[in-house]
Image (cartoon, rainbow over all chains, first blue to last red; front, side, top):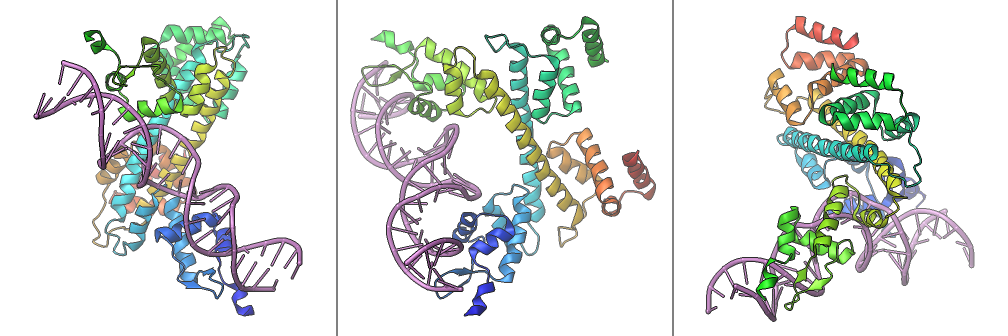
Length: 180
Length: 180
DNA sequence: TTGCTCCTCACGTCACGTGAGGTGGC
DNA sequence: TTGCTCCTCACGTCACGTGAGGTGGC
């Protein structure tokens, strides 16, 4: 009886894997990770093999692959469909990142164009850089964004830079750097 | 009676806006875009003002802002909370893009390491470039990826390049370019 | 007896898509 | 009468989170 104390129950496995209990219960219902044994009290008891399978699940989960496809992957002993599924996910990721970039761009454009506060809480250069950095845009991203802005709407770009209170001389430098 | 023929019904507005009927019905239920009038047959009749409001909705939707927040935004006549909401979305986008990049990376690493096909269907350089391009990775992205790979696991990078059937001399050139 | 973990439903999430079953309009 | 558009439920999606109500284990 004391022998069951070190068995893998949901809670233990959850802590070990970093997943939630409810996630593991869900995987059980899906058939992605079944616990074959139960204790006398009807507790789920996972085996070492189950824990190993869970590690595989986690690998694919970190790639953002849907649970149903992970099932396929784990059954695909011959690896005949593995590369295909990974490549498909890679394509979807490409499209999703593109879409999110477009969304970033729309927001940055709106933030840069309107004096959004009635109170005219002036956004200066430092504040602007701070916002962009908080959004995870690297220096490279910011440069690219200036280049795009300059190419698409040079006048708005000029106005935007003025609105940040940047000196005319520096504005000219920035815009020139965008065009070369 | 013929006068009602040119009124904006759901179907018409759907076609004009590029949304689906069911999306518009959903917005109605949410209170995001209500049609105030109904025809004798209980059809929804949208006004020009409604159509204008829908345009605003679409602007924010393209930023990926949740519908409930779009409601707030459209009620925020004083623009007091607008900048705040946009900046928050920008931060979330930054995190989401980072996460998707991590997912890309995991997949690329797995595709590059294992000979995934038992059949040894050799993946050569052209095929590899093709996969990466299909995934939306630009030349810059691919260069960055090589640099990271070289820095983190130089031996695996060497093996990977060999597995693509690239000449030793070119491999050396590629790896050198990554380190400088 | 007290806590802690476990169990099984069942409903909620977000932005719709998809029928089912039925009624006006031209 | 035939099609087309419209109407209102109501259920499904994806990966869980969150109770509710109840039972073992130490």
